[in-house]
Length: 83
Image (tube, rainbow, N blue to C red; front, top):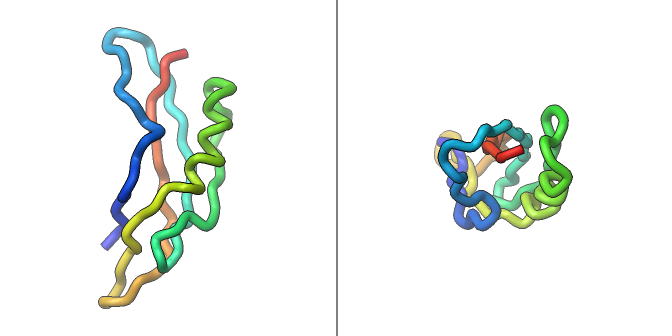
């Protein structure tokens, strides 16, 4: 079972009708639900998107579970941004 996000303050609603671009980050979530590693996949679409990397390290998750035990998990997070 994959991890579940406990707090999400960085991704807001988009204004409908505006063109968007997609950002992706890879997170490694530890056995305690902490984000151990963050890696931007591809080029960031805007300068503020780079700042989200440090914020992503503060996100908390319930840990992923395999056979009833918490395990590390690699998660790809995607979000759309206006240009």
